[in-house]
Structure formats: C-alpha cells, structure tokens
Image (tube, rainbow over all chains, first blue to last red; front, top):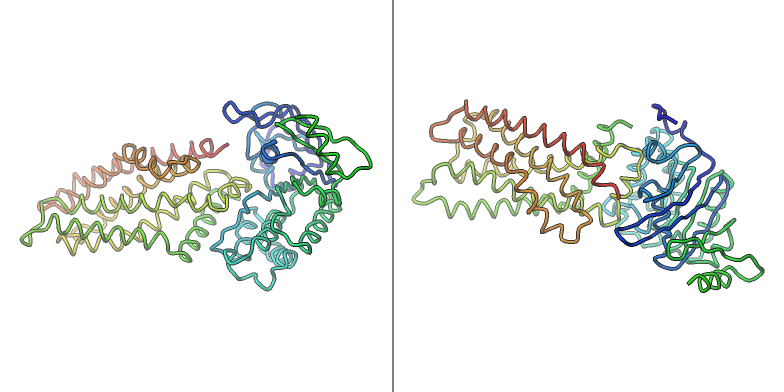
Length: 246
Length: 226
C-alpha cells in the first residue's frame, strides 16, 4: 500500500502481527523468529527472565527498533512506510519514564500532547483527566523532579495514554507502585481493554499479571516459550516452562 | 504536525528546562569569561593588544563555550530516556534536530551578547565599526558550528566516551566555519579593515552553512535509528 498524506485518524488498526521477527545487536541475538498476533480489546502479558528480549520486542513493536528479519504489520500497514503516522496510534511506557524532571507534571503532559498533534481544547481536557487518573491533580504544577518514583510512574503511564493510542506497550508498569496504585493501574489496563486497545505489558510481577491478562507470551533467549495451561498459578507454570527451555 | 512547528515546540521546551536549571548558561558564560581574562593577561601588555588577536580570541572563546553546551544538549535527553520519547512521537525526525539546533543557537547568541562587548572592552576591538557585517559573520559562523555539533552530539549520545570524542570529531569538520568566521571578523576588526574580504568570507559561510545544514538534516534520521 502506498503512503497517502493522511492524518492519524486514517491510520487506525485493530490487529498487530509479527511474523518471524528477529533482531540482532552486532553478533548478539536478542530476538529470534518471534511470531505473534494481537487483536483489539486484549491484554497480553510479556514474560521472561532478564535479557530474554521483552524490551527489544516492545521496541520493535513501537517502531523504534527496526527488525533484523521478519515483518511487523499494523492492520495492513508496516512501520517502514508509515512510521511517523503509525506512532500517533502507539503509546509506550518505557523502563525509563520519558519525563522531564525540570518541567511540572502538567507541562510534561502538555508538551507531549502537542507533539502528538492534539487539538488545544481536547488536550486541555485530556491533561486534566490524566492528572486526576494519576492522582496528581493537587501536584499538577509541581516539578516532576520532586516526585517519588511511584508518582512519576503513574504520570508516565498517563503520558503514554494521553493521545488515546490503539497499541499500548508497557514495560514494567508496576515498578515503584504501592498496593493502591497497583490496583488503579490494573483497573486502567482493564479500561483500555474495554475501549478496544491492544495492550502488551512486560512484567516480572506474575501474580499481579494473572489478575488481568488475557494471554501470555513468554520469551527465553529471544525465542517464544510456551507456558502450559493448567490449574497451577501462572508463576509455577512460567518457572516450569523457562526451566524446560533452558 | 509540520517540521517547523514540532521543532519550535522542542526548542521552547529546551529553553524552559534551561531557564529552570540555568546549568548551561552559567557554565558556558563563566567559562567564556575565564577564557577572556586569561587571553587579556596573555595578549595585552603595555596597554597595547597583539595585532589581530581579538578576532581569534572572540572565536576561540565562542567555540569552546559552545562545545561545553553541545555536550549537554543530548545528555539531558538521556537522563530519563526522553530522546526515545521524542523519537516515538509522530513527528518527522529532522524536527528533533532543528529544535535542538534552535535552542542551542539561542543559548550561544546569549553567550555572544556577553562575550562580544567584553572583547571590545578588554582588547579595544572596534566592534561597532561595521555592526551588521560583524553580526552576520558571528551568526553564520555559529550556525555552521552548531549545525554540525548538534548532529555529532546526537550521533555520539550512545557512545560511552562521547565527551572525549565530540571535540575530536567536531573541530576538524567545522574548521571551514570556524576559519570563515574568524577570517571575516579579522578583516572587520583589523587596523586597516577590508570589508570586501570580510564579505567574501561571509558568502563562503553562507555556502558552508547550506552544505552543513543540508547534510545534517539528511543524515539525522539514519543516525538516530537503532
């Protein structure tokens, strides 16, 4: 498909498919032949030990990393031709939080909202809603540098969701969150599912993930490892799958 | 969103961050003042200045202060990985380059507002003799240096030895812009000025800047791709 001069609204999709995706850093292989398909209204947990390739897969799906082999398609489009337009439909919460410590919570949200081309009136409403959702309405005009890790994590999640992305990629969304904030994050992820988002969340908190994921993708050494179904808790099945694959 | 609109957003954000921290402006201005004082003791004796020294002093001070600021331009974006956030935004990559360049230039012109009058004061340089020509030379020489510097700072932001590498790769490549600015300034401030030659250097700077900016805009997207 040739790339027309369309806006973000013309670039929506309801399925993301990775086919035999691999990614190498020099001689090191981070992903090897990963294939998967994720549809609107689902939450997929991305599991695996450290260095398994979770963040690399999220990087490839976010269009930031170019796969060394294989393809990723967003509906009927690919990132190579549609990169910057597709990115308007993708929201990423990274390991680092993508926030400027010298700016206030509100200024951070406004800056990124403008970069995503949000109309002023819509942006103003969205920022107020995001601040309330992050539990930071009272500290909206405080600099992010003065926030605790948990507060920054909540703000970073709302920053990633401000523009209403179709594809939501969260890397360790529960880092630094207290129990109440974890509950709120789970509720937020479920709300995104209801709204038809495609959510992928990489996490080591399998007990938490078990409460909200519709399916799981486990990586080990850059390859997919199947977690067997069963009545046991997710953590036990995950451990068995990883040990068998090692 | 248009390239220039996104670039302005990024530049404005950078300037807000700098106004809050005042890290770069204080460091660069303090460094520039220290340089000027050292040069004043070295080149001014018996109330006379070594001939043609002010032009060289002005440019060496500007370039060294600019190098300090350049290193921090992308270092700040590394702290919370915000460069990745910019790369993830639905904007064309050259707008990130232009935004960074614009904020750096505003900072450098701020430094020159302090440095140029001091060169006039300490070294008796006739800075008001041909203000438009001198301003043009400073503007174009600084743009050429910053255009390449911003690109190299982006290229090296993932290198562990970036602080050492940046000046090593930057100075040889930007030599035409530095020499052009310096030679033009020299002919404006000389005891017997030659405006024709100064204008020739100005024209060469226009050419250098056009080449540097075109190459930088063309290569920024590939060098920031992972």
